[in-house]
Length: 639
Image (cartoon, rainbow, N blue to C red; front, side, top):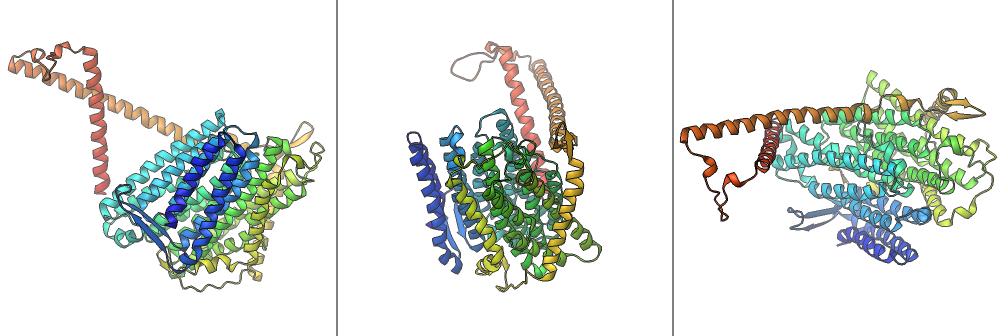
């Protein structure tokens, strides 16, 4: 019953909050805070039961195949992180949205998104998961377009478009999966997937595409740099900290539970994860808007997680370190990235600007804000003593154990290079905002920032440090479930995180990142303009994946198909006319004199020619499209 309440409670909060908010916004804020607080409290209350055995519930006749929900320790970590971040972000939102319009609408969809996200993580049936995933896409779209300006609607358009398109491909994978395996229960699929041969790759990659979009995986990340800056900061925080994890979770389900850690699938996933790490980190160095830098940073950090997921399938019997590393980085990324977005949002609340060329030096004397950003930054770069060091150390060791010879050397170089990019672009923000002096921004601006905006950031900072001090915290939780991702864990994992070698490796990477910042970012990107120095962004004129590839290809495909369908339509219409003429000649009967077989007694000749022609064209077009879809389906099934 707990599982149903976790989904329904935010729905009730959304409805009640919206009704109350029309008359009393303070009471609405209190209702939303209480509901999210109850949600996290409910999750905490479930821990003793879940740690002993999974909780399951099945409700028949829902979505045709029933609603199958399950909570085990793996899902519990995702759900706890979701509800924890949501609760803190809700508190933060009450400060951030004071100057914004449509607050009532925002909170309603904010809670609906929470409900659908929790539904994703506790679904044991892949169709249930997909349904909640699509609900999350539509509700979060309303958060993206919250500001109702041209830019936010453009961002919302690409976000929704990619969500729908990728979702349809994933749905095709689900239909094929059911057709070949006769089951959609996640825990049952891996035992029968190998029996269907090469079709499993068509199914696996089709399923992965929808989740890869949310996980910002290269090359499906094109929505990312537009959506994150467009959405209000609290929405951006949950987009990066939680909703992106829903995409990662889906890929984990596909790779581990459905594909059974297939080697080829994991190798392709590993390549795409490294491309996400590299491209995200590299492009982040060129950006000048703080939220856009953090957006590309999210793409890069999610690449680390996906790398860990791929290594789970490539490590064989020694996959435990990859499991722990991936799960740890999921939690760590949720903490430090939400913290960094909240700091950026605090700056925006005061200045209505996030370009480092315009707000440089703002935080030099804002000591609390500086410390909060520094903690989040040190967490991301993997500084010893902060949470990112724990997860990146495990992922690094997993990578080293997966390959040998030249392969591991190349991958080690790429891993270190991507990590140095992380240091460089975060140093760019920190030095520009919190170190450089600018007399224009004197004073603390304390009147503009309330405690309810600072408290969530302080809690996140404490969490980041606590995990670093107690690295076995999450490992002990995971060890309570020996059947993790359909993989038997030994229940015993001991690693000396703060060894000399691990600390030295981290420090070397950080120093390389400082070198990239000094020798590349400051020397090449920082240029003198009039009386001051500003950052340039040459990547704006480079090849753009969306504008220079996706859009032209879509237009070309549309034109080619339009010409093709038009030719087929013309041929079919001509064939029907010639057949009609031939029948008249053979039967010597005026078909126009045949009465319509209906009660009106109208003749075919009574129907205007324009209408008949229009109906013919539509009918044939629909027929042709249906015919083509049938042929495509037959080809796919025959693969």
